[in-house]
Image (cartoon, rainbow, N blue to C red; front, side):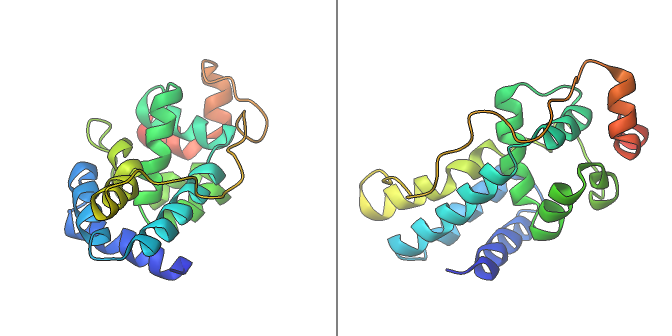
Length: 171
Protein backbone atom coordinates (compact mmCIF):
# COMPACT_ATOMS: atom_id res chain seq x y z
CA UNK A 1 0.00 0.00 0.00
CA UNK A 2 1.42 3.35 -0.96
CA UNK A 3 0.76 6.71 0.66
CA UNK A 4 -1.93 7.66 -1.85
CA UNK A 5 -3.92 4.51 -1.12
CA UNK A 6 -3.51 5.10 2.62
CA UNK A 7 -5.02 8.58 2.32
CA UNK A 8 -7.79 7.33 0.00
CA UNK A 9 -8.87 4.83 2.65
CA UNK A 10 -8.77 7.49 5.37
CA UNK A 11 -10.76 9.94 3.24
CA UNK A 12 -13.40 7.55 1.95
CA UNK A 13 -14.17 6.13 5.40
CA UNK A 14 -14.28 9.62 6.99
CA UNK A 15 -16.67 10.87 4.30
CA UNK A 16 -18.89 7.80 4.68
CA UNK A 17 -18.97 8.42 8.44
CA UNK A 18 -20.00 12.04 7.98
CA UNK A 19 -16.96 13.10 9.96
CA UNK A 20 -17.98 11.33 13.20
CA UNK A 21 -14.74 9.89 14.66
CA UNK A 22 -16.35 6.80 16.22
CA UNK A 23 -18.25 5.91 13.06
CA UNK A 24 -15.10 6.65 11.09
CA UNK A 25 -13.16 4.10 13.15
CA UNK A 26 -15.84 1.44 12.65
CA UNK A 27 -15.92 2.00 8.88
CA UNK A 28 -12.14 1.98 8.76
CA UNK A 29 -12.04 -1.42 10.46
CA UNK A 30 -14.68 -2.72 8.02
CA UNK A 31 -12.65 -1.40 5.07
CA UNK A 32 -9.41 -2.92 6.37
CA UNK A 33 -11.13 -6.27 6.85
CA UNK A 34 -11.57 -6.34 3.06
CA UNK A 35 -7.76 -6.36 2.74
CA UNK A 36 -5.19 -9.01 3.42
CA UNK A 37 -3.10 -8.92 6.62
CA UNK A 38 -0.06 -7.49 4.81
CA UNK A 39 -2.09 -4.54 3.55
CA UNK A 40 -3.37 -3.94 7.08
CA UNK A 41 0.24 -3.92 8.32
CA UNK A 42 1.12 -1.41 5.60
CA UNK A 43 -1.80 0.78 6.65
CA UNK A 44 -0.68 0.55 10.28
CA UNK A 45 2.87 1.60 9.31
CA UNK A 46 1.56 4.63 7.42
CA UNK A 47 -0.68 5.59 10.33
CA UNK A 48 2.02 5.13 12.98
CA UNK A 49 4.62 7.08 10.97
CA UNK A 50 2.24 10.04 10.72
CA UNK A 51 1.23 9.71 14.36
CA UNK A 52 4.90 9.98 15.34
CA UNK A 53 5.51 12.91 12.95
CA UNK A 54 2.74 14.82 14.69
CA UNK A 55 4.39 14.49 18.12
CA UNK A 56 5.42 18.14 18.22
CA UNK A 57 5.08 20.92 20.76
CA UNK A 58 3.65 23.39 18.25
CA UNK A 59 0.92 20.97 17.25
CA UNK A 60 0.18 20.20 20.90
CA UNK A 61 -0.33 23.93 21.40
CA UNK A 62 -2.87 23.98 18.58
CA UNK A 63 -4.66 21.03 20.16
CA UNK A 64 -4.64 22.90 23.48
CA UNK A 65 -6.44 25.86 21.89
CA UNK A 66 -8.96 23.72 20.02
CA UNK A 67 -9.74 21.46 22.99
CA UNK A 68 -9.52 24.06 25.74
CA UNK A 69 -6.61 22.10 27.21
CA UNK A 70 -4.93 18.85 26.21
CA UNK A 71 -3.38 16.25 28.50
CA UNK A 72 -0.88 13.69 27.20
CA UNK A 73 -3.71 11.28 26.38
CA UNK A 74 -5.84 14.00 24.82
CA UNK A 75 -2.96 14.97 22.55
CA UNK A 76 -2.44 11.33 21.57
CA UNK A 77 -6.11 11.06 20.61
CA UNK A 78 -5.95 14.42 18.84
CA UNK A 79 -3.10 13.19 16.64
CA UNK A 80 -5.18 10.17 15.63
CA UNK A 81 -8.11 12.46 14.87
CA UNK A 82 -5.85 14.78 12.87
CA UNK A 83 -4.71 11.89 10.66
CA UNK A 84 -8.36 11.02 10.20
CA UNK A 85 -9.01 14.49 8.77
CA UNK A 86 -7.03 13.59 5.66
CA UNK A 87 -3.82 14.53 3.96
CA UNK A 88 -4.55 18.22 3.30
CA UNK A 89 -5.51 18.99 6.90
CA UNK A 90 -2.76 16.80 8.36
CA UNK A 91 0.06 18.17 6.23
CA UNK A 92 -1.27 21.72 6.56
CA UNK A 93 -1.28 21.42 10.35
CA UNK A 94 2.28 20.10 10.37
CA UNK A 95 3.40 22.95 8.12
CA UNK A 96 1.60 25.60 10.21
CA UNK A 97 -0.49 24.46 13.19
CA UNK A 98 -2.28 27.82 13.33
CA UNK A 99 -3.58 27.14 9.80
CA UNK A 100 -6.06 24.71 11.35
CA UNK A 101 -8.20 27.82 11.82
CA UNK A 102 -8.73 27.85 8.04
CA UNK A 103 -8.36 24.12 7.32
CA UNK A 104 -11.21 23.05 9.61
CA UNK A 105 -14.75 23.90 8.53
CA UNK A 106 -15.90 23.65 12.07
CA UNK A 107 -14.75 22.15 15.33
CA UNK A 108 -16.97 20.83 18.09
CA UNK A 109 -14.78 19.96 21.07
CA UNK A 110 -17.49 17.54 22.27
CA UNK A 111 -17.08 15.37 19.14
CA UNK A 112 -14.01 16.50 17.24
CA UNK A 113 -10.40 16.18 18.29
CA UNK A 114 -10.65 12.69 19.79
CA UNK A 115 -9.77 9.94 17.36
CA UNK A 116 -8.68 7.34 19.90
CA UNK A 117 -10.56 4.55 18.13
CA UNK A 118 -8.93 5.44 14.79
CA UNK A 119 -5.60 4.62 16.40
CA UNK A 120 -6.76 1.06 17.11
CA UNK A 121 -8.49 0.34 13.79
CA UNK A 122 -5.58 -1.44 12.11
CA UNK A 123 -4.85 -3.49 15.23
CA UNK A 124 -8.47 -4.54 15.47
CA UNK A 125 -8.70 -5.49 11.79
CA UNK A 126 -5.40 -7.40 11.87
CA UNK A 127 -6.44 -9.37 14.93
CA UNK A 128 -9.80 -10.20 13.38
CA UNK A 129 -8.15 -11.31 10.11
CA UNK A 130 -5.37 -13.38 11.65
CA UNK A 131 -6.47 -14.28 15.15
CA UNK A 132 -3.18 -12.85 16.44
CA UNK A 133 -2.01 -9.54 17.81
CA UNK A 134 -0.14 -7.30 15.38
CA UNK A 135 3.60 -7.61 15.81
CA UNK A 136 6.15 -4.81 15.82
CA UNK A 137 5.82 -2.65 12.72
CA UNK A 138 9.56 -2.20 12.30
CA UNK A 139 9.39 1.58 12.57
CA UNK A 140 11.80 3.72 14.58
CA UNK A 141 10.50 4.27 18.10
CA UNK A 142 8.50 7.38 18.86
CA UNK A 143 10.58 10.21 20.25
CA UNK A 144 10.57 10.37 24.06
CA UNK A 145 9.61 14.06 24.01
CA UNK A 146 7.71 16.12 21.45
CA UNK A 147 9.88 17.72 18.78
CA UNK A 148 10.53 21.44 18.80
CA UNK A 149 10.60 24.03 21.53
CA UNK A 150 8.28 23.48 24.50
CA UNK A 151 5.25 25.75 24.63
CA UNK A 152 3.84 27.24 27.85
CA UNK A 153 0.21 26.30 27.31
CA UNK A 154 -0.89 28.11 30.45
CA UNK A 155 0.41 31.51 29.25
CA UNK A 156 -2.47 33.12 27.38
CA UNK A 157 -0.20 35.75 25.83
CA UNK A 158 2.14 33.12 24.42
CA UNK A 159 -0.73 31.07 23.08
CA UNK A 160 -2.35 34.09 21.42
CA UNK A 161 0.98 35.08 19.87
CA UNK A 162 1.70 31.55 18.58
CA UNK A 163 -1.87 30.74 17.47
CA UNK A 164 -3.58 34.04 16.65
CA UNK A 165 -6.04 32.62 14.12
CA UNK A 166 -6.94 29.57 16.21
CA UNK A 167 -7.35 31.70 19.33
CA UNK A 168 -9.57 34.18 17.51
CA UNK A 169 -11.76 31.49 15.98
CA UNK A 170 -11.83 28.74 18.64
CA UNK A 171 -10.12 30.08 21.78
